Image 1 (cartoon, one colour):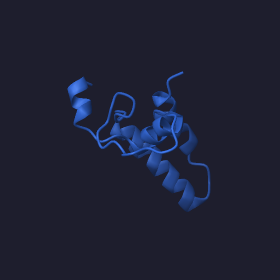
Image 2 (tube, helix red, strand yellow):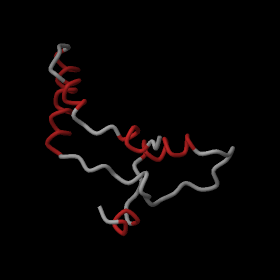
Image 3 (cartoon, one colour):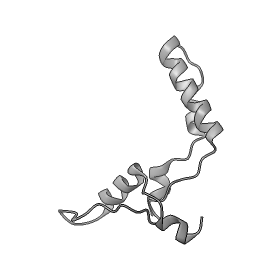
Image 4 (cartoon, helix red, strand yellow):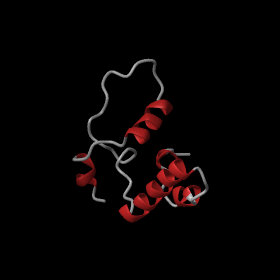
Length: 85
């Protein structure tokens, strides 16, 4: 993703929340409305997201294991990705 593309995007909520939680200071003056390198959207294959969502919903309806945990594990972890160690 190009740096200029990031400036046009809105930040992902969970990534922005994680970034804010790691910042020092008592009060944040204004929430950023554009993404930066730390809060830019994580590209994910829609097929993987759809499979995971379907399995989660099926588990809720049928009350049995449909393999949702395995599908969810294939999705990127946005908080871990945004956290710089």
